[in-house]
Image 1 (cartoon, rainbow, N blue to C red):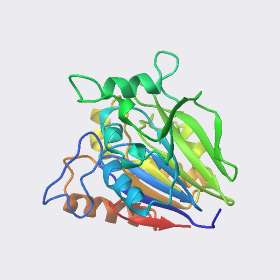
Image 2 (tube, rainbow, N blue to C red; image 1 turned 90 degrees about the vertical axis):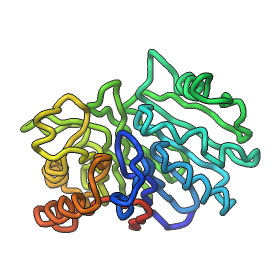
Image 3 (cartoon, rainbow, N blue to C red; image 1 turned 90 degrees about the horizontal axis):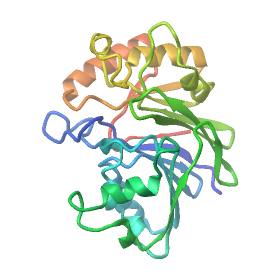
Length: 276
């Protein structure tokens, strides 16, 4: 495997896609991130950003094995799945992973529900790649390739969600979304994933005032992201899962405030790549 270890943001909005002139700079697609580990591709979440990512992978034709991990299967993280081009190429191997559905459901059953009448015209049987659905126990450490380790932990979100820490060549990228927090009580799962990580992508959908009014909505704030990153001794914090009503100008203001509190903090933009 090569030595490239990077993360690219294909969708950074939460709840619902928000295209339009006021969201062009940060992007309007819902959550999807691509983590490149040498010549292997790890994807986290299948929001609307998955469609352009899939188009890029199909055009390149070099990523014949792809692992896509779901934090959860709420629509904003799931709706792009039927439009993932590599799943329609018979020369590809595509593995879909989820840990939040057991024991009540399976990932395959969730996918079949999404791609069924009256929600969608064709079932997942139309996929032509070698597709597999893998349900794991949250908290497990997974190894989608010999040199890649994926650590998982439960997050605080309605219907359950899973956070991920991808480790490769001695470095780590943590994706901690969607999760709420209890003020004054650092989330142990988030800290586990963030500990000494090189990059932490954190759910910062709400301002502190918004969170106070919606503490059980399953989302957090950039302020809590800063507190956790400091405690975990993480390096770069990336604010993610932007409120769909948040304009680019409003995100500029949040980005400036967060970077002033913790220098080096980044506010995720669609199309941006961070390399280690």
